[in-house]
Amino acid sequence: MKKLLGTALSLVMTIGLASNVTVNAADFTKKEEVKEVNYVVDDVEEKPEVSYVNILFPQPVPGKTPKEVYFSTETEPLNAINNDELKTIDISEYWYVSEDGKNYSRMKADSKFELGKYYKLDPMELIDVAFSLYANMDKYINTDVASGLNKDFKASINDTPIDMNGSMAQLFAVVTSALDYGVCTAKVNNIEATIATPVDGEKQISEVKLVGEDSDKIELAKESKLIWIDEATGKEMAADEKYVAGKRYTAKFNVSLKEFCVYSDNVIATVNKDNSELVKVDEKTYTVKYTCYIEAPSIVKDATRKNDSSNKKLTDVNANNAVLADKSFTYVVTKVATAKKAGEVKVTGLVKKNVKKANIKATVKLNGFKYNVTAVGDKAFKGAKNLKTVVIGKNIKSIGAKAFANLKKLTKVTIKAKKLPKIGKNAFVKKGKKVTIKVNSKLKKSAKKALKKAKCKGIIVK
Image (cartoon, rainbow, N blue to C red; front, side, top):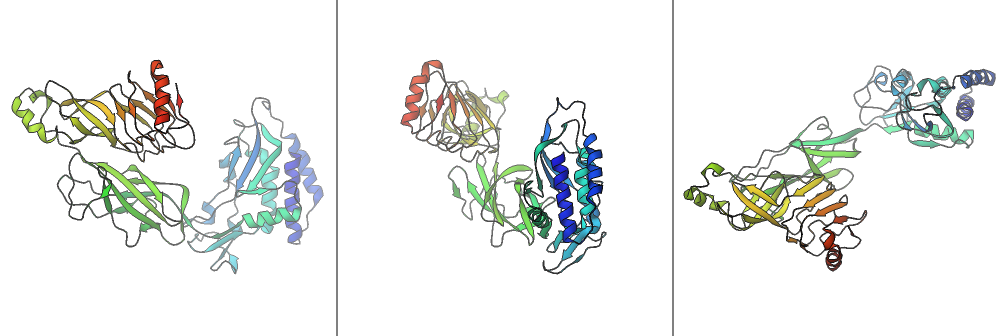
C-alpha cells in the first residue's frame, strides 16, 4: 500500500510541478496514514492479493459522449477491482479534440466522439482524479475476490507499463503518452453476412449481403466477387455450372475496412449465423469462407424399401461414387447397398468444419440404406481448425493421406478397430502439441511401426 501511495504521490507531484500547481505534501501524508488503517481485511489469508492492475482510462467511442465512456480495469486475479464503482468517476470535462492531431481544443462534454478526429486527455488536469483513484483503491477492490494489494504489485495505464522505480519525469512521460489516443477509430468484432441457400439444379448465387452491428464499418472488397468451390474436386465452379444435390460447396468473398475502422484482435465471421473461416489477406482485408451442403433428396422412406421397384428408384443415390451425407459428414459410396445387405462408404469431409469433436461411426443409415463406414479419404478433415478429438469407428480399414494433417488443436484420436487400418502418408502430421492415438493394446507395436512408415513423427501411442 505504501508503494502504491508513493507512486501516486510521485505522479501527482510530477504533474503538479509540470503545471506550476502547488502541492502540499503534508496533506498527502495525512491521507496516506488514514488509508493505511482501512486496508485491514478479515479474510486476508483466505483470498489472494492483487498482483497486477491495468487501469483503462475512458476510451473514445464513435457516437458516444465523454459522459458515456468509463474507467475499467484488468487485474490479476481476474475481477479483483469493482468496475461498476469506477464508473462513478467523471472526467468528461478533461477531453481535448483535434482535426489534425496537432492543434487541440477543449471538447464539450455533451458533444460526441467522431471517426477520424484526434483525442487525448491532459494528465496535468487530472491531479485530483489521479490521487483519488490510487489513494482510495481499497474502495474499488472486490473483497469477494481479493484481500488487498500486494506490496510488489505491477501497474499499467491503458496497457502501458509503469516502472515503479523509475524517475518522476519518466512516469509523467509514460502517462502523457498513454492518454494520447490519436485518431478515433471504430473496431470490427464480427463480420456478419447472409447468402441465399444453394438449390439443386440452379445457377450459382452471386450476391452477398453484409449485416449486423458492424456492417457500417466494412464493405465488400472492390473487384471481389462471390466464388464457389466444389469441395469434391477442390476447384472453382465454372461460370455456367449448376449446384448438385449431395455435394458440399464453399463460398469465398473478400471484406475490407472502411476509413478509420480496424479489426479487433478476436474478430470472427458468421455467414447465415454459422461460424465461418477467416483468412487474413492484409491489415484491411479478410477472405471469408462459408461451407454449406445441399441435401440429397430422400426418394423413398424405409417403409417402402421392401418393394423392389422402390430400390430401382434409389439407384440415382445408392450408386458407386455417389455423394451422400448426414448431419456430420459427407461420404462417397464405394459399395452399393441393397435392401438386405449393407453397402460401404468412405468419409470425405465434415459438413461443418468448426466442430471440436468428430465421431466416425461404424455404420450409418443414408437415404434408407445401411452402409458400413470403411475408410477415411485423403485430406478428409482439411481445414477443421477447431477439431480436438476424433473417434474412428471399428469398421475403418484405411485412413487416407493427410486425412488429419496440420490440425493444430487435434490432441486425441481413438481407433476402435480390432485390426489396424492402413495409414496413409502424413495422415496425422502436425506441428505443436503432440497427438495421442489410442488403439487396442494388441495393436500398439504395429501402430507405432505404421505411423513411422507414414512419416507421422512425434505421435504418442497408447
